[in-house]
Image 1 (tube, rainbow, N blue to C red):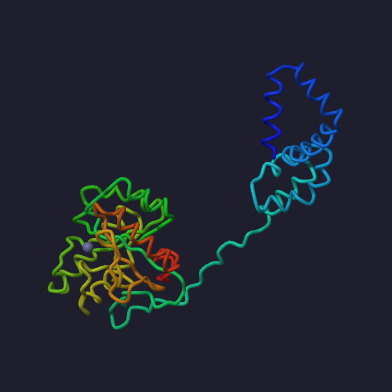
Image 2 (image 1 turned 90 degrees about the vertical axis):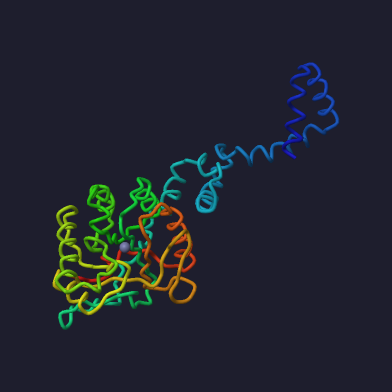
Length: 305
Ligand SMILES: [Zn+2]
């Protein structure tokens, strides 16, 4: 309807005032102009009339109601002193932040000289943990990918992979991720080495991490995952609080699960600094959202002090 009225008016102006006058006179005489003006006034007033006096009476009613449901022009046009508090008030109302997460799991202490081992955090809380290993591939965009998705991760780095450019990970640390211990040489035969050699692998990497990133690691991940009680003792003697393995991983752009077909509460997820980092993160995020779990930093959740 409004379009029809508008299209009537503009051609009329172009044709000339004389013709318009004739038409208007004819309409007035027949009474059609009056009824047409009334009908025309209705849509015009509704569309742009919020600044006119009739709309002021609507403002207290429609302003707050519309402000919460749409971004209609009425909300911005009706910037009267009466409407501003109503518009501000809803957004200024205290929105409860996420309550502080109180973990329902306490990491057991070193017992019999050996660190505990976790492959998954035994919790039913809606959390999971991302761990990223090795550090051989250093892509500048990887940190941005984590930041864009609000992810902090535990980085299990091996000295042999990062000693050429340890500063690459400084920005990860500055952004909240934490560097942990993944041995010096990434020896996949670690468990076959004697105690002293295992201890050297773990302790020397802990020293390296502390030297370069200002924090001594508290978690150790054996290269490839396997460990023995000797490994657990060597880790404890290097000041580690736990061995952290995994039961799910993001790999080659998809998720792999040791149990089931989805991420579970408390899951520790493994991925790597590899060329397919972006695809792995996408696979992880899709699975994480599907599971309704929040990515929490392992070091924030497990009490190691
Ligand atoms: Zn590794």
